[in-house]
Image 1: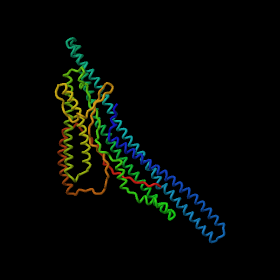
Image 2: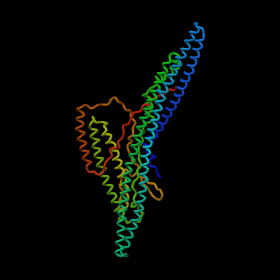
Image 3: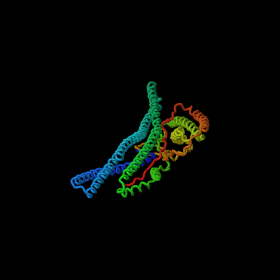
Image 4: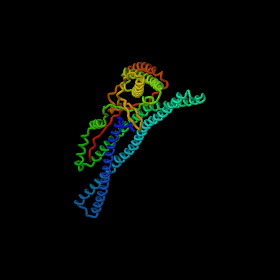
Length: 472
């Protein structure tokens, strides 16, 4: 069976970021392991040096005092001081670097598992809806064939059966018609639900993508702080350790955080490739021109389905017109750029355009069949080259590739340079925006039964920091 998730750009970008995050986590664990070994060496060395200092001190106590002995006493004190420095360094590495890092990695691991579970649940809903559509279609096809057989029986036996038997057959035909209408509506609704499940999955990928970026930012800052603290503790060793510290200190001074942030952004940048999503189209028994269905009923059934689609297309068109009016109102008021309302409206516009494209593709496919039945010229539509079919288990399935804007972007957030609207400009913007919103909301009054889900909002894209880490 065709996998509806394979070619999704959102899914590919999310998996790429997960791979990048996994490499960063592995690096963090390796650095922490090395720091733990360094801390153990410092503590063990301090213990050994302390024992030697005590041994030398006891030896000096049993020796007659002279200048030479006094000089060795300073050597013993120097050993004690050095032991104390190494002890403090080992403990500082454990408390200020290793312990916080373990805690952060543990929290990150739990968070990533939670994010992966969210993505998996949303993906399973998409696959489940996809399978339900195919199952509902198969059921509808079987029922339609049975209904047509019954209808043919009723027509062919009008002159040969008694009035009572004829009444019985008509009753069966009526029940069959009601059952067929119910299954048809169920199949149609499952097809429409495919939009919602697909968008929910993509929004989940978007949100989880942003969450992982935040985890990466936190991890990088933690490693940078650990490196700075490590440098400060090394510095207190004095002149004898300065030579060892110089190379590390120079390396740290060469760190360009902004350059590394840019490098990370380039690695995780979203390509501008066209984003195409696959959606199943409705396939009906009536579309098979080689079936045994009566031509008049075949045409009548297709027309009724086209009428239903046309009503939904008109509703979606009104929704889009209203949303366009809202976006126009936002864009004409510079004081309200990048507001939450504008982002919500843009997300709803994407959802409405997607729904409208799917409805029009279904309508075009049925219209083409109807034109062939009525021996009329085939209709033209931009989606004609985007509709494909594949055969599976003696059934042909149709799907459409719909081009959509790729909304997931990585942007560097900056707290500077943001313009705060003045009181006068804000008041003027409110007045103009209110007028635009009234016009937009008026266009929605005709669609009381078609609610847009305001929860499907694209999140802010966050900036990401990365640090060049020096080796010990």
